[in-house]
Image (cartoon, rainbow, N blue to C red; front, side):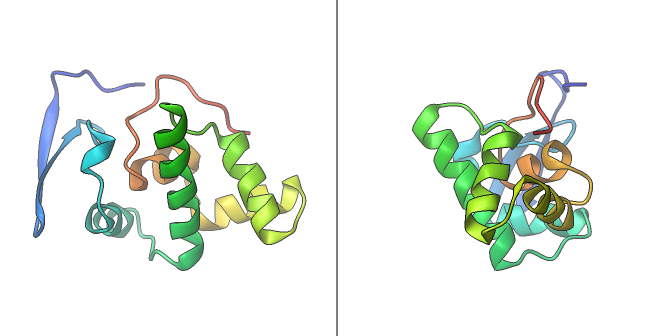
Length: 121
């Protein structure tokens, strides 16, 4: 369920403050930083690797180019091409990188707004 817009929280990071919704998603994806990603990842029990950052970079570039966040199927296609694997291999990799899922971890760490609805690919 999407958080109510009036329920906001301010996250204080060494590089500055950012506003998040009640679920911890950035309210403005332009305020994203590596520092934010690392903070959220630590809270989620994830140590970010180059593979994580490749997915994050793809998601952020897609959002910038298209004005909407990438559906999971586009990220799976990106992973399949990057890893030279099939859809199952890409899905397995996605869940190794983000074990609690695309929306609850990848989107949050990448600084996307909390989606209203999504596809799991």
